[in-house]
Amino acid sequence: MDIDWLSRQGNTRKSNNDAVAVGIRNNKLVIVIMDAAEKGTNPSVFSEHWVTSLAHAFLSKPDLYSEPEAIHRLKEKHKALKEQNFRLEVASFCLAEINLNTLKGNIIWLGDCRIGTATNHDVQWINKPHNLVSQHQVTAIPNELHNPHLLTRSLKARRFQQPDFLSFALEQTDELHLSTDGYWREHLEENTPLKNCEDDASRLTIRNIDHKSIKQTNEAFNFFLIN
Image (cartoon, rainbow, N blue to C red):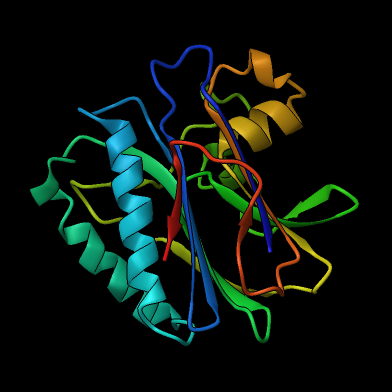
């Protein structure tokens, strides 16, 4: 499979706090993308820690996790955050695990990172972000929102918040896209040129997903390949 990782620091950000980890083991592909807020003591280290530790944890089983198993594994990893000096950090993340034989998969997420598929470069997002705009589509939240992109759920060491879980299936010709909100919202939806984006903007694209080896087209400090 061909992997392309694009990640750009936002113009109003002190550092790029996005990160992604990708790994294949026992015919299972695991991807974790994360966007840490500029809170706490070291958000970029928080992103690196969470994406790599979660990827290792979910690669440890050859079959796909059921929802109860996945939530239990997530809670186990979450418990350790308070002990690792991440008490003040806040982030969004999305994890995808895919059986490369069947191309069926699961998604677990908190916050506004998204996963989608694309044909002819038109991305169809699979999961909905945990923000006020998304909630407004299903509940009666007023239109006049002070911050419509405010997160309603996120990853915090102080308290475990229930993630969402869903299953999906891919076709061999599908491109897989994982994106932080700086890319899918600010760049794609609001048509802001990447060079003008205020937020960190990151996107992972995977092509030829039925191939069981990884070919990277670029390298970056916030891309982690898990063996």
